[in-house]
Length: 453
Image (cartoon, rainbow, N blue to C red; front, side, top):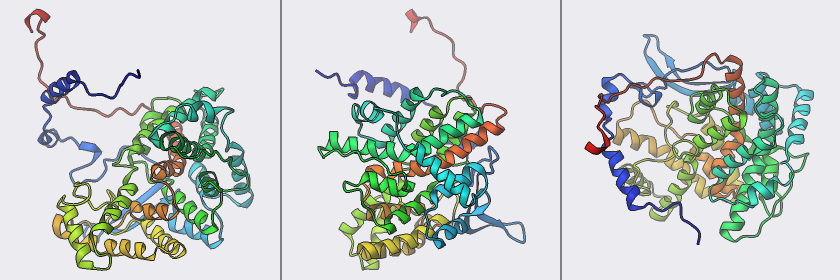
């Protein structure tokens, strides 16, 4: 009989009660001790903990009287506006993710020859060690794609002849290999889950060296290996927009923290994956899609009053998951607009026409217009609320036919580029291990002998 390690026994329940009873930290203590909980100040802004050249996020400007004012969101990779970066490769009608990876890692845009060489190098790394798929993925299928991805990354340590060398050259080699391998690890993990846990046919398709990252992802995922140019170009654009977002997001900060200890690349990236898995970070686009599925069952999709009432009930914790949130609306940094959402909106519109999903896109547009007004009215939010990158990315992934289980892993396929750039930057500039301070709020206690307890 297989032993269960997941059952919560009466003993565990009892000990959890003791743990909860002895937790004496109250919310007011953070204010009394002037602790920036969650590394955020009282206004919700992130506490500055480092310097970076990898990317820049701008959501505020200083007015004439020194007042801080919200502004249209701006995101730059290595100083280059992401709108201009996207405009460059879309105007040329070419893929942009590989160029973006080069920019993030090396701090400058490649010329044609450099880009061709870099793309060729990535392609040469786009394979897994012999028997890795069989031994590490198929023999131990899991139910969570992010955990499979993390496990696979840690397992690759054993296949590396020089895993602990943290020289820039070796870390760069490891990062390039992981960037190339991530689509394979994510999709093969999903195929394993789909076969062993859902009883579907198993197909493991090899990547093609002439394909881009986005093309290969669709090629190895789909049973027939086919895709349209529009599908691949839009997925490529989504990867570009998810590749990096400042050093302060949770998974990138995790990369900095773990890297500062001097550990190996595989451990640092696995830690970042653990962070991204959290629903407060990487799983929001799934929530958006599920919320809209619930909405379409309960509203008249062309009746704005019906939609308004549903959104109000969402905020009142009376609909969907009872969390009181309109998923995909608002961002910790951006207020008036998220530039990534602006770009993805146009992609979603174009794809909806190709897929015959114009009604779905129209509903998203309606919610994007109504939700900020309703949130401002019910929550008294004055900094501004707008759709974030998750609002449209989930819709795009759904129209592309991507399974829900791969939404967050695809985020990781893109963000490994930013994590790699930040890991290298931390190694280049690290002086000390990152070690924030905590204030103890418990009084001293006398030790009591075992017989007297």
